[in-house]
Length: 178
Image (cartoon, rainbow, N blue to C red; front, top):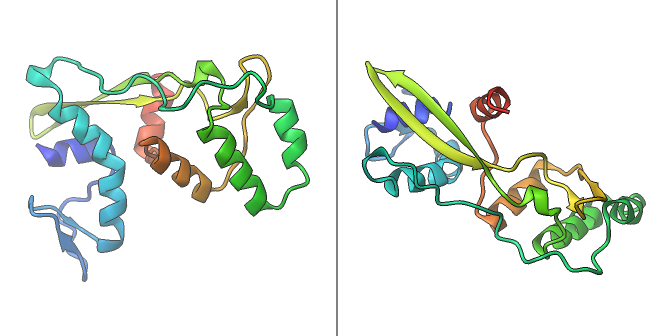
């Protein structure tokens, strides 16, 4: 069953027998450098699967776990202007602080549900995961800025917010259902 789920999200490579692989205990073999990263990426999918009795959809996510946006928080235009002369390290620390303090438009706080079904071994497997409706932005609903960031900052934010960066397969599924 787990092979089907992992194939559906594009991270499982069956019968891979490369030197140095780790056995996960379920019969799957995963390269140690990818093991922790992959488990982190699929943790929320596995959480959903364990919370779903008899195939009924019970979505464990609804919104990003952020505090409300303060009225005096800078707008997207102000953040763009403030960060334009900062070094990358300082800019990314500033953006991290803005996002975790809640300076994110309200329309980006909710999740849309993506449903993916794959038939493997003649048996259908369905997973669901939540995605934000657009790229992450900072600012208000009327004045926001889609802030470019390094993969390192994106992973910091995912770790802090209990989210995951999507795989290539997930991005294709999101695009197909947008």
